[in-house]
Length: 132
View 1 (tube, rainbow, N blue to C red):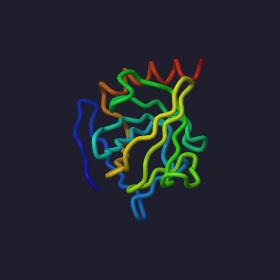
View 2 (tube, one colour):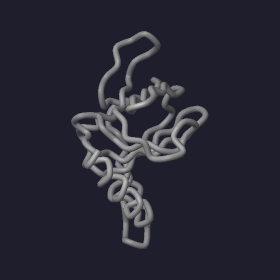
View 3 (cartoon, helix red, strand yellow):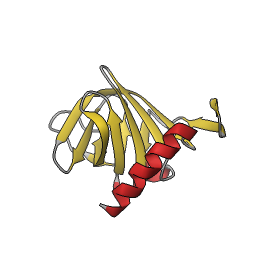
C-alpha cells in the first residue's frame, strides 16, 4: 500500500481490486480518484459513489470543477455502467451541459483522505454541489 505524506498527515493509496475495476459505490464519499487516460489526467472527488456522482476537473474538458455522473466499462456502442470505472475502457462524464467520452482509462488511483490543499478547495466545491 502506498502512502503519501502531506501537511495534514498521511493519506493512503487504495488500488482497485480485480482487473483494474473500480465501483464508486465501494469507496468513501469525498475520496479523491485520479484517472489517467492516454492523453489526460482527470481528478475526481466522489460526492455520492452509489449514485456515480462526483466533481471532475483537469483533463482536456474540465478546467473548472464540474458536477457530473460517471459511466464506464463499455466499448463504443456497448452498455455503460453507472459509477463503474475500468481500465482499458473509456470514461464517460455526463454533466448538466455536456457529455464527454474520454480515451481509454490507463490507470485508476483512489486516495483517502484528500490532501490539505485539495480538501480545502474541494470542500467548498463539494458543499456547493450539495446545494445545487
